[in-house]
Amino acid sequence: MEMIETVKPIQHLVVIGVGLIGGSLALALKRAGVVARITGVGRSRDNLELAEARGIINDWTHDVATAVRDADLVVLAVPMAAYESLFAAMAESLPATAIVTDAGSTKQSAIAAARGSLPNPGRFVAGHPIAGTEQSGAGAAFAELFEHRLCILTPQDDTDAEAVQTVRAMWEAAGSRVLCMTAAEHDDFLAAVSHLPHLAAFALVNAVRKQGNDAHEPFEFAAGGFRDFTRIASSSPEMWRDIALCNRDALIRQLDAMQDELQTMKQALLRGDGEQLLADFTAAKTARDAWLKRQERDR
Ligand code: NAD
Image (cartoon, rainbow, N blue to C red; front, side, top):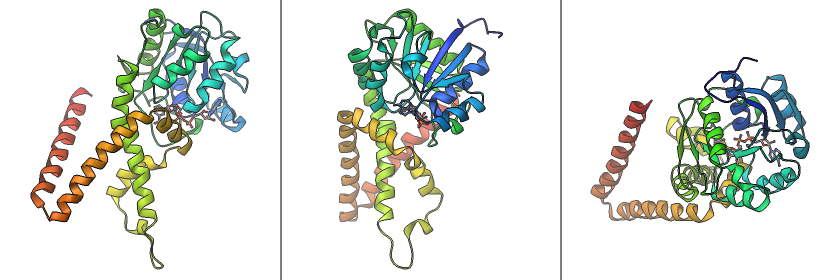
């Protein structure tokens, strides 16, 4: 296979969890020509067979310990609750030279799990691609998912510099821009801009679905606004349960902040205070419009 020269080729990549994220990463790396062989590991035979049929992986197994035996690089792309048992399952057979990374949405919990179970946690580089959709499984994977998107790495003081460089090069080969920060910073920011919106979307759909009457159910009257706001409520419940629990403290702080905003709006409504509502709505619109402009400029 012809490898591109700027990135050190990965001889054997093991992707644990060949779903939207793991599958898309595999496709992107194959397309970039930086990996010779990809082994998929997962629970569902149907999903792994689909991944093989789509050319996402070269081979697959249900057995983590066997899969990682001659791996250069192992990527975890599974729900966060599976980390500890997977790290424990690979600990014995993982080569000392192998690098382990992940794509999970919370980073302090990923690092704690690696420290608890991996023989050499200095070779673990915690990562999080800021890209995704509400779809799941290998069927939803596509090579362009990470193009022009940010990927955050949260190396620790004792993380091996060469391991960080390899993982950085992998995400860059997939088309991402890579940024490093502390795991705590990551978890606080992502609680605000990702985890809270998912909870808000789940809560909104639940609040609305309970309000039907004998003649109608409320979704009949919903249009683009409701659809846009609630798109992420179609995400995997299992995955979001894990993310919420793994980032509980930061998420509770964000729920408090959101509740304060809602409370301010409720008080303004009770007072019939149009000025307060206008000020709140205008501040939100100004902040969002400016963010969209910056995004367009950076693209
Ligand atoms: P997904 O459901 O599409 O894929 C997860 C895969 O992991 C599935 O194929 C599932 O069968 C497999 N799996 C589950 N438990 C397993 C276990 N114990 N052992 C082996 N395989 C197992 O989910 P996804 O969207 O690809 O998310 C994967 C990870 O990426 C999650 O940690 C998530 O937090 C993170 N992430 C998701 C998004 C997103 O928008 N979907 C974005 C960034 C990061």
